[in-house]
Length: 205
Image (tube, rainbow, N blue to C red):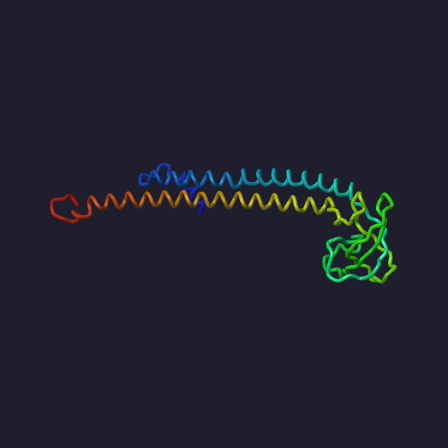
């Protein structure tokens, strides 16, 4: 619909029956098309770049302050924990996980105990695993990797592009709808003036 309206600019330029609103509608469609083709992708690229910069900073900060620490399973635990062990075996989301209570040492040598999730096939007491901890030795979630951050940034950019394009098309439709409403209103007023005399002898109808 937008492309057809844009092509109508040239077709209607010298058309004697072309109404001013037809030309205006075509120009509105052209402006909307330019916004969707040029501005929306630029906004998406900017959004993706800014998001990627922010996420990459977060990735670097997380990797700087989270550490894989050796731990020993104390016992199995009920429920689930958001703190996972060494993620190398837990990349797949469908990997079976077991919640356990484990003990480890903080960087300052303090003994720590907490509930973590492990993908180890053996979760019996005494099993050695690795857990993510922060600088103070408390359990922490697995840090985000750079590839995942970039994927999120790309998806954010695509989302902004689609959103900008959709909003532009919605605005174009609203403007065209308003123009049509005004056109119908003018037609109703014109008909109200000549309608009662339509077809009568001597009225020029």
